[in-house]
Length: 382
Image (cartoon, rainbow, N blue to C red; front, top):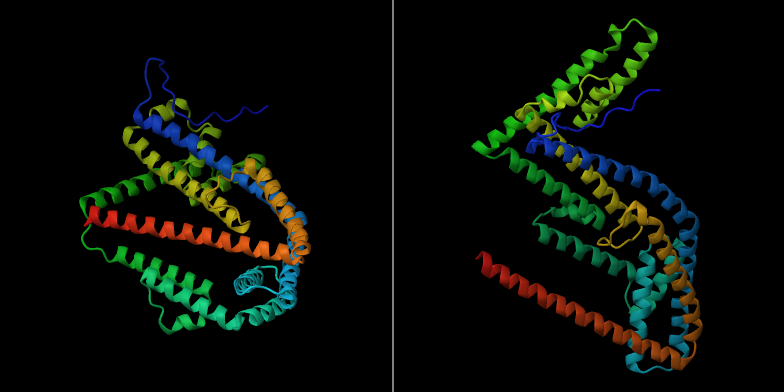
């Protein structure tokens, strides 16, 4: 039976000798990289299972929810014509119909037929044209983006959707940032030291690669089985080097017994420093990949961006979302029947006004806090 590859870590041979700061950092980076790799693998395993359940269970239920939402809006429209309401209640009812139609039309799975029905209801109760209002909202959004980021897209912005304008502005900002970096003047001593360290780190990775390539080059092997083994190993070496994956290169050296624990302990302080620099970059890249995967998952499935979402708690998150959607769907069915009673309709309209007042008060409080924060910041950094 083939022995397992030894763990990649630096442990002093003498028990009385403590690892240096660089050695401790090396061991810590290796463990952190392995942890991020495991997390990335867990996401890659868990996400497809979540998506499959979402397609089979959640989306069909979401279609029912949207259909019942449409039926509720249509019921509200009918009630607006046959129930006598005060001016205040009628205004609230109009606001609810317009808000719900706008939201439903904006949903991803709204059919063209349903959109036409909803737009007609919006136009009827708002006294305006939905397409014109949506176009105006898009223009305001795009102009706001230009003002916030200080980017002027000129006449081009008229031909872009809100999403395209956002993408174009981000591309312009990245291009300006890159140009600014290239246009800097004389490099400081700190920048020169950083460049030298980076060059030395890259050289350290190249040296590991060259040693592996020299030991594993399949063209130098006459035995067919050994040539096949070395070809497979060399493919792994080339992939790791192309990814600047120092950890895999070092693990391959351990695997072929090209280095051992004594070799790692004997690394000079400078070589260890360069290894740690490359491993730190590798760790940062992995952390970024895990973060982007988690963020994309939250965006795709409308999860709270500030909520902790991990592969381990995905099943619980899904059950919660599914139960919430089921309860909301059943609630729409009951509400639609209950609102047909004039007394219940008026009570419900009153609840909507009170809810909106609470939201407005919360928004006002947030705006005041933002103003106070800005004032404090101005005083501190003036």
